[in-house]
Each structure stands twice: as structure tokens, then as C-alpha cells.
Length: 462
Ligand code: FAD
Image (cartoon, rainbow, N blue to C red; front, top):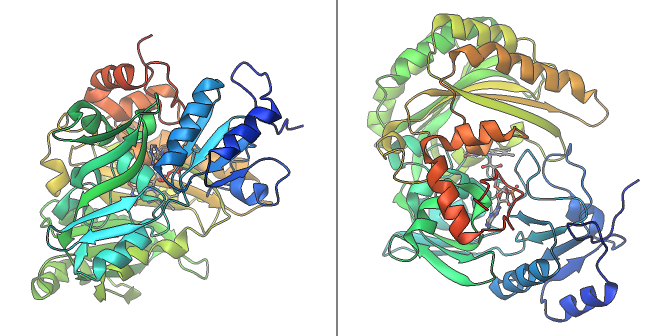
């Protein structure tokens, strides 16, 4: 039986009068159990996450964030911070504590002259793309347009422009941050540079980012889309993809893997985005498109925001999800055979096994230049188990774990922070890699009591 009331970390309840007082100084919505909006507000993107916060503070601006942080500190509350609510491990919510929900804090402000864009913390990738596209610009982000920019940028951010323009966090110029003590600071190369370093890949450990200033790039029309092969060609297609990407130019980012067609038919797919000169792109993509006997070649010129939405339908809202991933330091033929063998055992047409290759501009940044350490040019394998309500989740999770276990032998031990589900602290530490000790120092300086603990947590030195 869920308790469904606001409780302190020691388990004692918070007096209703205190909550009323909190509401007086808060401009946004305060949603508690019993409120008509509670059921919707407590849910995050992954339907497997079923938590009951004691209070959801839907902020309208920085003043609300400061007010919520101070109230939570004073009352020793467990705090979850919510951007887009897409973290598969459910780190944007909690039981009994307070959710500081930024999803209503949307807004995108493009400066075409400087080619920069400021976004508020509740903005989705699609909302930002829409505005930047008006000016022929784009910021490198992820590949599903409904994802929140906040969590994605703080964890690194890989997507269709990663090889040409780097990670999302590589394009961060400054952040407006509310710290664990409720102070407002600007983090940039000049102001609180240690905090700025930590925010670029260190996740939600150091404070609440209320807005981000990004560098944008001239990207308007790209050559991209899907090449579809029968599933029984998966081994050959993945081998060709591996060999092709070894010498691909930075303008090309491509993923390949075992997925299903909209009608549920198992297929092999290569998904590519070329963001340079389009005539040159036709030439570059020719060997990829002429390989084997595709069922369909859907590569075509398209506005960049359309490219950004191509994968949306593969991740519908309301599904249950369990994700695992790992970098493969050795993508040998044996490893590919294992990927195919296990990918063919997926328990749902919504589940996928996808290889992604980054490198390029992201790989030329030093592993300790930002908190994002995983700069090596290796293939990342995403194993996404996805199923609908009522299905037996255990068999889907078992498939993801077995696939991950089978491939682990080929991994260099690194993980992509943004794709971590409910992994153990040891996996989080491995994702931070060479930067972990420095992250502990930044955490100890800015959040010595681990006020922000519901994230891929860096534990401060007490
Ligand atoms: P939330 O779930 O809201 O939060 C995640 C974490 O960030 C929490 O710890 C939270 O406390 C913290 N946080 C959120 N907002 C703030 C803030 N403003 N200040 C401080 N801390 C904050 N990642 C990629 O890199 N590339 C992809 O292509 C990609 N595709 C994805 C597709 C789907 C369908 C999904 C579900 C995820 C995808 N991801 C991808 C992973 C994604 O980057 C992470 O799930 C990320 O956490 C999403 O951001 P969010 O704001 O929605 O996170």
C-alpha cells in the first residue's frame, strides 16, 4: 500500500500548514496525492516506473526553483528533479519526496547573429529544432524529438550531428544554475568553470539548470533516412556498416541494427544522416546504399527537424522499457554474430539492438576536457527492451540482460551515461571513467550533503 504523503528523509510526515505556506510563495502548480492532475503528473516516460511523490512542484521560473529547493532543504526532503522525464531508470521521480518539475519551463530564444540559442529547462529537442530551423541552424542533440533537452545535455548527448559538431554538452556555452544551497549562479568557461566542467557530462549531480545557452551550427537540409534489409542479411549488413564507418567523413553519422518494421516484421536497418554538401553526400552514401539487396532505400533530402523525428514512432509514449548498453572495443565478426543471434531473440517487435558509432568531433575532445569521458571511437550497442502493458516484463528484461551478458566480453568497460537504466553504482562510476575523482571534488564543493541524489549519483566526500 502506497503511503502517498510528503515525508522527510527520516520518514516523518510534513505538516499540512507548512505545505500551505510553501504554496503561498510558489507561482506554479503544486500537485499532491488526491489532486485531479496527480496521476498524470507523477508518471514519467517509462511506464515501468511507478512512483508516488509526496508533492510535485511544477515550476514556472527560477524563483519557483529557488523556493522549492529552500523548502526541501529546510524540511530535509528527498528531491527528484524532472526535465523531460525521459530517463529510463526513472531518476526524475521518487516515492514520498518532492519532485521539482521543470517541464512547464519551456522557451527557446535564438540569436541568429551569434548563432546561439538559449533554452529553458523543460524544452524538448523538437521544440528547439523548430525554432533554430527557422534560421537555418541546429544544435546537436539526440534522435527522438520528444526527449527532454535538460537531462540529455547534462549526460552528454549523442545524435545525428555528433560526428560533425560534437556532443550536446560540447556545444554548451553557459548554464543558469540553482545550487543545492538555493543560490543562483552562472556556470561557463569564465564563471564557476569547475561547475561548468561537471555539468558537461556529469548529469544532474551539481544543481538545477534552469536554462542552457548552446552554440548552434548552420544545418538546414540533410541527406538522410533508412535503408531496410531483410533480417536474414543482418550479419552481412552489420559487417559492411562497421567497415564503412571506419573511414566515413564527419558529416556522416549512421546507426545500424536489428529492429522491426511498423507491421512487426523483423528487419535490419541502417539509419543515416549526412549533414554536409548534399551532392557530395550522394557520393559518400553510395557504397552504403548500394550494398546487398535492400528491401527499401528511403534515403532522401529532408529538413533537419524531419530527420530528428524519424525515430519517434519507434518509441511511443506509454510503453514499458528496460534498456542496457555498452561500448564494444572489439566489434569482431564473432561479436556481430552474437549481436545477430541475440537480436533475433528479442521478445517484442518494439525491442531493438542497435549499433551506434560516434567519434569524429566528439572524439577529438580530450576525455578530461569535460566531465564526459567516453570519447573513444568505439561502437556503442544499445539493447532496448520495450513492451506494452499487461505483457510479462520479466522475459523482456531477461532478453536484454542475456544479450548484454553475451556481449560484455567484447566491451572495454565503458558505458554511455544517458543510456544507463537502473544500473549499479559500479556501472555509473565506469561511465564517468577517468573523470570520477574530479567529479567527486566538484560534487563535494557544490553539493556536500548530496541534496541532489536521484541521478547517476556521484557521492560527495563527507
Ligand atoms: P529526466 O528523466 O527528466 O531527468 C534525467 C536526469 O537528469 C535526472 O537525474 C534528473 O534529475 C536530471 N535533470 C533533468 N533536468 C535537469 C535540470 N534541468 N537540472 C539538473 N538536473 C536535471 N540520449 C542521447 O544522448 N541521445 C539519444 O539519441 C537519446 N535518445 C533517447 C530516446 C528516448 C526515447 C529516450 C527515452 C531517451 C533517449 N536518450 C538519448 C537518453 C536521454 O538523454 C536521457 O533519458 C535524458 O535523461 C533525458 O533527459 P530528460 O530531461 O527527459 O531527463
